[in-house]
Image (cartoon, helix red, strand yellow):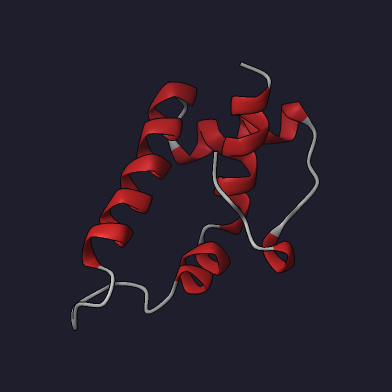
Length: 78
């Protein structure tokens, strides 16, 4: 699960979460779950480097706010 900062937390239903993750995975929920994990891992690996996509974790969460919240909802129902 993602430890989402309070300012990025969104309440969503399970149906909304599944739809968001499926969209991120181009129609496949499992691929969407893997994809958001991959984006997070890339962020962590590049953290602090000059070519990092995000300067801070907050920047990451602001960009992927819907996806990480949906991920947590889907994972909590698994």
